Structure formats: C-alpha cells, structure tokens
Length: 177
Image 1: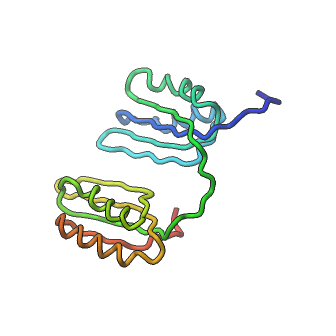
Image 2: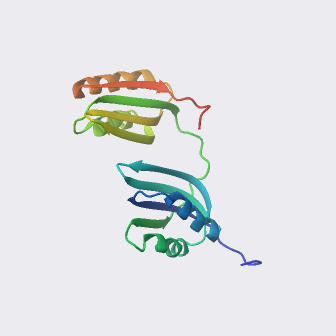
Image 3: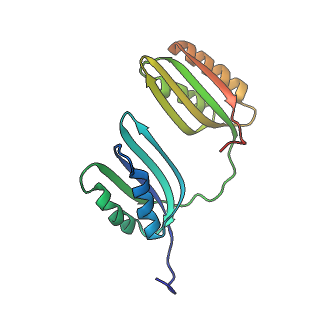
C-alpha cells in the first residue's frame, strides 16, 4: 500500500480460550504482519483459561478479524475485534489508590466493595481477584476524587465489616507502571 493514504483504526481485541503456550506470540505476530501497533494490553491465565484484551491501531476491524480467524479455527480460541473511538490522552480524573480486600469467600464481595468506590465518585481502573482454598483476595486500582480517601476508607471499612472481610486503601505508587 505504498503511496496510498491508509486509514488507521483504533481497535479493541479480545482473545479467550483454553491456555496453551504461544497464544500471545501467535496473536502478536498476526497483528505485526498487518501493521497493527499494539498500544495497551493485558493478559492473564485464569484456572487454565487464557484471556487477553488489547487496544491497537491498525487496519480495518474486518481485516484483523479475518487474519485472526485461523487461530480460532479449531475452536480452541475465540477472538473478537471491534473498532473503538479513541479517547485521547486525558489527564487522570482523580488520585490513584489501591484497595485490597481479603477474607473468606462469599457472594457479593466485589459488588459491595466496588459500589462503595463508585458511590464516592471513584473509578476502578484495574481489578483482579483470586480464590485460593477458602481465601478470597481482591486487588483494585482506583482513581478517587481529590481529598476523598479518608471518607472512602471509612465507608470501605464499614462495608468490609458487614461482609466479614478485611480491607485496606493506600495511595498507589505512581512511579511504577
């Protein structure tokens, strides 16, 4: 396509399926061959299942979807591609904090704790959970409105007590990515 005006699209791509070695390399190679620039991504392994979400800038969604199709041909992976509207480089809306919750597993921990954050005007920017035996752990990165951390910490502590779990809220280390 040398000499042509190529329109670049921002795409959200998800890949899920049973984990196996090489999924990240396979997806990254397909995207590189297409000239798609991977800008943001996260991947994890959840109890033997692989999940990856990424944002890239590249060709049309249909072209990327067609190129990823062979990876999903055997039914082991599901890949979806969707064009998204770029957000631009907006400054963070609040102060970064990390909330950690731990305790006996029970229904509704994530719902109750994230509701406290949302009701206080917080935005959850990253969240992971892990169940090990009967111990349930939640770690969430959240942007809180400036000056609200003490009040939010109190609300989180009350909700945690009602759930029978422990909670901590601390400023995020902004020097780390």
